Length: 455
Image (cartoon, rainbow, N blue to C red; front, top):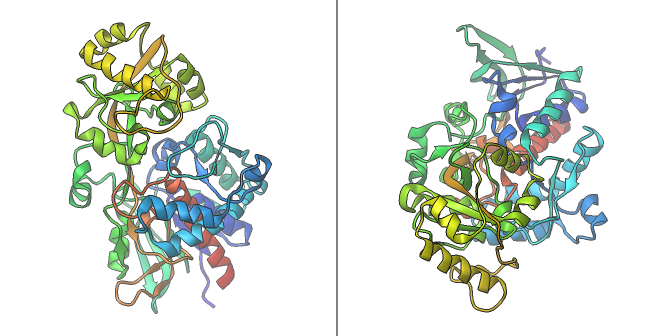
């Protein structure tokens, strides 16, 4: 048997840390590299809302929620119209509960179940999170555990340049540092966890033209490195048009307002003071709808009741602290402060209030239970954003990268998160809340489990 520097190299210190920690727990020596020395603030995991969907967990049982991997799979099928990679969806929904249990019990992550509002498309409350509901706290916990683990070495900044293959199997990596030097490490297994291509405008324009020019709210180093490296090794790719958009980014602070504002009853109007779509459609697909509005912008309108409920989110608290909320005692006053037609705003908001009270059908077809907005009111100007891409290298149910030629695994090569195909089907409409973290964490978990089984 050849001598290796490490048993596993992980490129990407976001969701890839799940693979590193799990593999280390299974007795493997792991090196983690990341191109960004500020990765704890700048990668997609650090920017997320820390929602990890899992089905059939002890937290759900304690809350009296009946859920299962099969029910979760059915939700994915419905949301994507049956277009998602079913093999991956089955593997990830089945692994979700064991994974979050391990994260809580072995990593000491203080998980809790979100039950104060319900994400569109999920037929059961299954999003698990942490206090503050912010990815930076989640990532900080994983980084701390990785730095303290005797079998894990974390090196930044270091960029993966090449994966070496010998005899058809992974044999090493070549990585570079900002001073131009390169290092080679011999490893029998590599996990590509470098995210997708959202940070490469030319690739976004090619595969997601409806989001070309829209603000990218993701990691700077998400430039399609996994696609480049995989293509050089004969790997297949798919679902490159899939992505998570978001329609609730504060225009002034460039921070996430959060869709809880809408799910608790908030309304979205354009610069003409008019609602233009069912706000509960989903924050991902709503991004392209918002991008088609005048000026590619709009306003989320909430009241004090909604504001208090949303303060549980660090993101929303940051928006409020930034001064981005425009406050008013009446609709007329709010219209003046937003510089929108007062008659149009009053017409649509009053109609929405009547619909909320069950007095008439909602003009945009919204059918969720909500209360009518009452003063005092607040509004925040929003712009659409691309958060991350959801297509990438084709992987199997063990996160092994497959070849274009015959769909066979490339021995020792794995991919997770935005570097791999996801479970959101095509476009933005198939995205369920938490799909990003599920593929980032879940595929990393499956890769570590496969490594443990074959060594």
